[in-house]
Length: 110
Length: 117
Image (cartoon, rainbow over all chains, first blue to last red; front, top):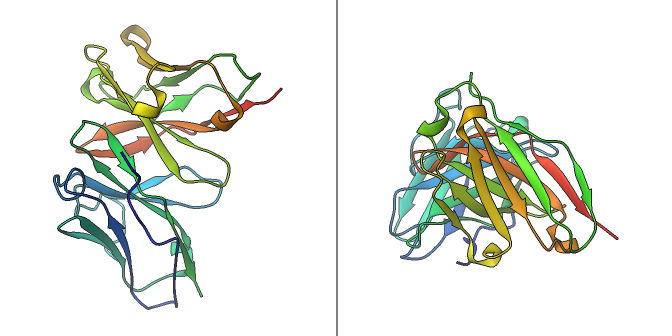
């Protein structure tokens, strides 16, 4: 099972919106609504930001939203803030009952 | 309060084995599967496998099959991951995380495993 494809780097200015894509196949992202997104600051443990494509866990800012179209899922962060600068990873359940992560996207807030 | 508490850092020689633990107090242990994920230095997250504490069924990623075994002890609400035939490429932080609705909702603090001669 190959890793999901994410852009390596994304950047934006405070207040702007950015979108991070996560492209898989019809055997993972395209087949199930079990796509999730994780935020990881340097030296810290990953934090769940979005589950089941669009669901925001309690405590996660509503500036974070998720969507999916076909084999590509997306994470959108609106009203970008300095503290959003981090690495972001997508993950999906797969047709062989495993999970797979994306390669990660480094978000820089300029 | 959901917490996953992992064992301490390990240093191993190539060819050795390591057994990591992940204690999960604070919720119904048998109610959620537990994932294991690793992250090599400066690299991304890599899914290793999953165990169902209620019955002991496991699924491992193909790359680790034959080298990894996940087990659980319901009496102590602890899951274990043993990785054998260690090589330098296995140097990483290993995380356990609770499964919920297809996601990993709570993560342990991570265990650094260093493989070096």
